[in-house]
Figure 1 (tube, rainbow, N blue to C red):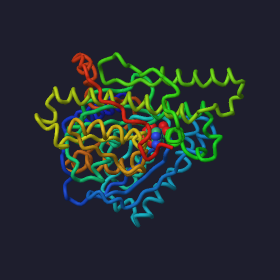
Figure 2 (figure 1 turned 135 degrees about the vertical axis):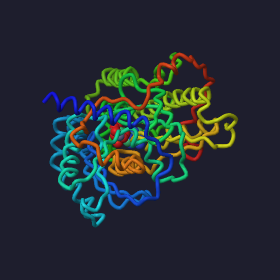
Figure 3 (figure 1 turned 90 degrees about the horizontal axis):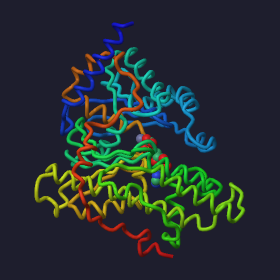
Figure 4 (figure 1 turned 45 degrees about the horizontal axis):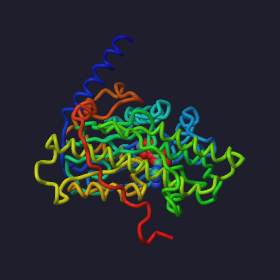
Length: 426
Ligand code: KG4
Ligand code: ZN
């Protein structure tokens, strides 16, 4: 037993050290096909991708409708649903590509971070396949995979780039130097923007409106906000306004908004399932504040990267620096437009993947597997499958958040664009 633990630890260290050392800029032309499995949260997903970025097939079972009815993600139910569907999802992906497991070069699986019970299902199933068919297993960091997906659709997207990852579980700013070298510049000190949107949408009972019924809180809130006639009707406080770092916070803001909703209900004697008046304006205010928070932290990260000389000197006016926005919240067009407008003022060209690849999917895991596989086949062929363990709370790359804070960078923040484009004003 003890020997086994020591062995696990040694292999775990090997993987971590390797993750730091290993570096590749362009995907090699050596043909390779990887099957990727994702079960870190509430999507059971699988995809088969080749080294040219061609998606040979993908399949996904989303638990969204179940969790929407239950009022949030319950890890026990999530695990059960992953267990029920994993085999079918993988089989569907293989059939879609007209392949067998024996035809792929390696199996990639999300092993960190995420909901432990959910991660366990994917990792176990991937290990089972790897053992049964003697295939190498590539453990994948979920947030790194989100960050690198854009390279699949944009082969011209080169390292280094600045990346904002915003999802239901995370909010992180990172300087991505290679497929495995990440400098973490900022991270959330509490919750994440996706969860913030989901909870506020639930408090507003947006689900009662047919057009918002079948989507998660983020898209529902974005759609409701687009119908606002007065985005300034509600005023909320900007999180961490006076803290000169790149950290994020959403819990205090979320409580402030939910308190406002409760106060209105109490004042008007409205039951919990009734919509409050001007709820679309409230959604617009929420979206504006979250956008402003994301923009300010990102702008400071740009200044920090400039101090580091991360993108070379004098490159600011030519859009020859790269910014990537990814994670489920990157599906939000208002935030993306605002981000694009802000970063372009600092010489950044922005990228985001197509929306279906911004949210959790199997393609990003297979692609990350490929980014790791090339030139390192031997390492993964020799990797002890038993050493790959689910790890729910890992951070991203090397932590620069304290260094960013110490710089106490002052910023003249650029303006947040208007909520409504001219042609959208009703
Ligand atoms: O990356 P993802 O699929 O799963 C996690 O790793 O968390 O992100 C899901 C989150 C949900 O909280 C969802 O509400 C949010 O992304 N989201 C959005 C939009 N589409 C999805 N948030 C804001 N606007 C959207 N259009
Ligand atoms: Zn995700």
